[in-house]
Image (tube, rainbow, N blue to C red; front, side, top):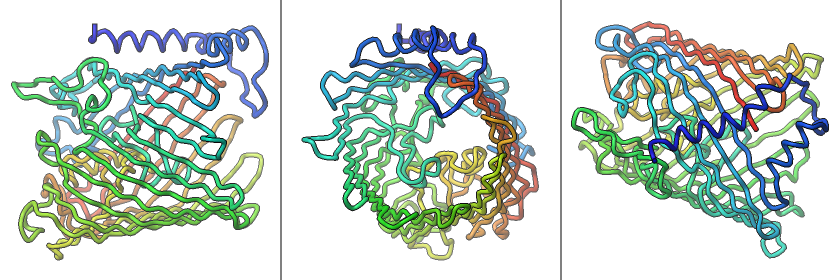
Length: 498
């Protein structure tokens, strides 16, 4: 029965999305949805009682990339430098409110993949064809709003926790980096207090993450027992078990300005079966200033400092006093943007974006200067960076560090419900040597220019139930790398929501 659960989830989501396929495209406006037989039926089905709502979605993606994972197509990399696969994510969710202000929320998700070329998926034996994975509850929580008639909300259980600017969550966003954008959940206790009299919001969260997808809430189907050539190859969500605490404060008492301040503690604890997991205690202090100083201007400036201790087994022996020891952390990072909004008919916007993440100094063997982006390991600014950092960090997906980037972007809406954005970044490496390289021959160990990065995408909202996008990225490698190959990433997506 367990093997059939992912198929059942897909069938349910397809059934839920069927009316969306049949519906003629309509113009999306900020006003309420038009009345009609379809809208009435949809409301009745999704909200059968005043205490229950439910919904579903289906995301179809085709992703293709070349050299992004291997950094080159030469030598042994020629086997899997090119990847082409379909991701079929289905989700079904429900929310029940048996008592006023108290809700029970659940969502289950599955994402089988169809590999068109020999895959990079170790659990799938690096093969081709259809890969059935497992179903997972990526939301399962109890939420209490207006606790004791106070402006306080408490949520306990599996939930999404994303702190900072919407769409630009820097350090807290994704608790499950290994499964990509399939899920982003945290097992957490979160309390949010809105002090309206001083225009301040207080967020406190306690996080508990296990590397095993079924470590806290059982999965639907096995996520662990995959034996390839006599060796067990589990599906992990991260390289280590992780716990932590976050205190995040946002104040809007100044006109047209928001000031955020935060403290984050993250504890990493290695898992015996994962050879490259960390043991660490990381403390991060940071702040963010953002606002709209004029009718056409918007900005954001964020910075953070890290300290603590980390034992990272992926650090090469020549860059530590003793291999695999705990080293003191002293690292910092920041990101910023400045945007001009034309406020014309095409909604033109131009921005200048910059980011800095310190790298590990190879000469200070007793100290680790690598900035750790904590739970920010998601494709915040680049889909391709998720992959090309793997070789730089011995298999750690999207563990971005040792990075400087700066460049402009342009956003325009040539038609209603369509957004087109193009970005250029010059990419740099503050430290010329990647001290955690899986394959040192891929890096020059002398250059600090990562290369020229170009990204462009087109998004279109067909109607309230159907959206899609086309996405492309290119990176011309610079002298930080030993080769000068071109890295490419292409994606097409359709999203159906019921």
